Amino acid sequence: MTTGAQIAEEKKKLKWKMTKIGIALISMLFLSLAVVIKPVAGGATVVKVDPSLIEYYEDATGQQFTVAIKIVDVMNLYGFDIKFRWNTTFLDYVSDSVHVPRNATYPDGVLYSPLIWTFTQVNATTGTYWIAYSSKWPAPSFNGSGTVFNMTFKVKQQPVQPQPDAHITLELYSTDLAARGGAPIPHTTQDGTVILHALVARHDVAVVGVHPWKTIVGQGYSMRINVTVANQGDFTETFNATVYANTPAIQTKTLTLTSGSSTTIIFTWNTTGFAKGNYTIKAIADTVPGETDIEDNTLTDGWIVVTVIGDINGDGKVDIKDLVLVIKYFGSYPSHPTKPWNPNADINCDNKVDIKDLVLVIKHFGEHYP
Image 1: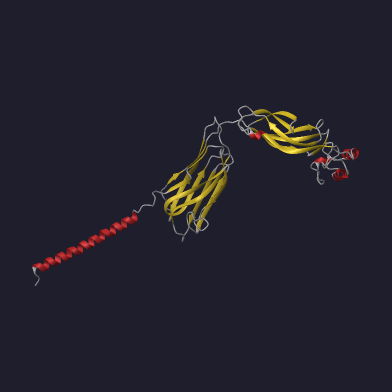
Image 2: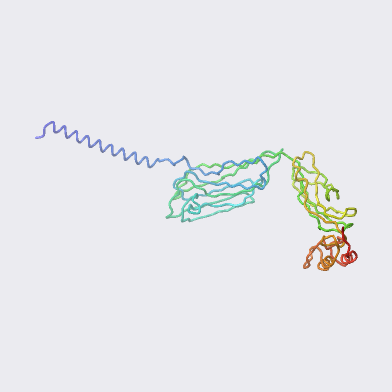
């Protein structure tokens, strides 16, 4: 016969069992909720340009830089469709490198093989880039962060005051991310910015080339010297350029150059009155008002021997060696299709080696200096 004490004990045991079942059910509920609402590490998914800001304070014309387009903190990524653009007034497209799929070649990439769809299209003229990729079964979904592609640009020009600074947006103007099964993945975008700070306008001319037409000339004859000058500043400049043989000035010419332009001037050196010997050729562009970079206004490049008429090899005498040389180059002229050209054999400087040059060697044969 069951006593009252035994009944009380059974009720106590049943209550304890029900309590344990309740605790177990609550635990399972919390565990399931934890799986459902588990947040993505690092916050919401972002498609961004990295670095987000590039600035140039000095003249960056011609310089290259690279940005990466990344997908950050994504879960269950199976495909993407991204459109990107830039300002072609200031930037030139150079190249791009797609980092899909993530593998040994691109350990920082996104998506996994196999891929079912790949698409890239660049238009350097309009400054647009379109890329779309998708994995296919049995590829796993991509979780985490990675680089979609890198793109390299070259700075075409930098504004000059009074022009304003150039603020260039590297714009992610259309982005779609898809999970396995095609469901869209919510995300935000972060564009990039390139700032080209306007340069202070400057005056700057330079001599960039000195090229004597020949290296040996008979005393009393004239020869050409080509001098290339450039306007490396931001204003149209009018200035003088002068060529010197050692200290004496050979000739001065006045020219006008617009900003960024260059030209080659032909100077003529009449060696009458110049002593026989070696001369170093130098060209100087006059300093223009406001110019501070004056080191490149002077260029010394080339030497010329003023010698006895008929001395072709510059050894100070007219002998059989000079006769052999004029015969070797006889009939030649600049851009001759078959005969090599030696301007030193053109004694009278008429752009051809002919009978007149041969006669001059014979006429002065045996002369020398000193």
